Image (cartoon, rainbow over the protein chains, first blue to last red):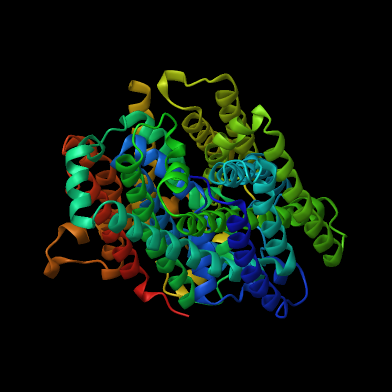
Length: 489
Length: 124
């Protein structure tokens, strides 16, 4: 039962038009300069701060990938996603205040810029930028590909793959370019609300229409799919996926940059608990869909097809289109944030770092040009689907994990040095890369964990054999003084 | 298997060390003899914070702030360990939504509530 392409076009067009209105409105508030464009002059209020963090974090993976994971592995997938949320909330409570304070004190716009200033070396920021770009562009392409496949599958080929991917790419570009962070943050408010309301509404609809309500559904679950309620995911692969995700809040630049934007401490607090509550609810919804799919569309060979199959074969077209809009919103709200952050990093940590005499206008022009370049590159990758994409996108969370030891050291270890941080990131990413390309897991340990351990060890040893930065002590003292002033622990 | 356990132990140790050191050690204060003073300060802070946790309220000799930090460290460390241990060691074969599913859900809700509690004293 394919959905008519015209309904999908109408649904997406209505959603895009609403986003354009929001984006246009925010454009009126854009001021001058790089900091205003990329971090809204550190003046975002609580609602956009919380929802841009949440919508950026949660992508199309939730209602496609996580549903598929729950479909095949049961409640372990629920545990995986909630363990990630627990880690993120704990990390947020400790690092968000530090990054917020340091960002203000040292006028940082991008995540690598903070490392450059703390380690007193532009090369640290440059290497971190290159690692992030190489890892995260393929991951964004996969999001475009997901929407392309979903549109194609739902309409029975009525919307070709390339057009489906374009449907995700155009709003990404428009929202990111139009008014920078303000546009992305406020459209993320819209996207976040769409993500929660459409998925929650669809969940209740499916349970009541196809399963006879919550009571009969739970009864059926415990009799027909009781194996899914056990912890089925073997411990080692579970840890292999959970540990890199645990540090997502620090390793991914698009979420890191969001610690700079809250206008005050109260806003920062609301951002953290707002995100936590959103993530908690959205995770419960997504994993419930995985369990429901197992009852309604059992026997699928490819678990990732669970949600697309449910939409295409069970629910009425109008519900399917609403869900598709919700999933597209989730994908776009993640990619536009990634592209905006990466573009700011190219302008600040590559162009400005290599040409210190360049004006702020020139930096902004370069960064904005890269919004186009990254969007188009991601789309082209999605169209041609080179084999390397699969490897790089799988590496994304693990590859960027090698930056985490340097971030920890930046705030907690004054002895940490720039050469050690550089070597730590470079060697770590090479180890992770070799592991993925050649399928190496020495002693059964995934290469991401080896990469993390190697980067931490190199940072530690390297810092003792090289000269510490002259002003590291001052950096930590100033940050700690501000932390005490605001009552941070 | 051995490699995995080793990696897990390493990460747990790093995480626990970080959390404990972070809460126990007071913010760095510069002084003339950095190496010795920092080591003394860390050692003193560690002992005093642990003694605060262990001692009866009337016998506590260090500030409440230090003790509270140590307790928070302990709570978060326990949560992280429980996240992995309870579902895999105890609830693994419980074929009910009241098993691992409910455990992970409740633990996450508790963590969010605790972090909200921790943020109460943040101020502009």
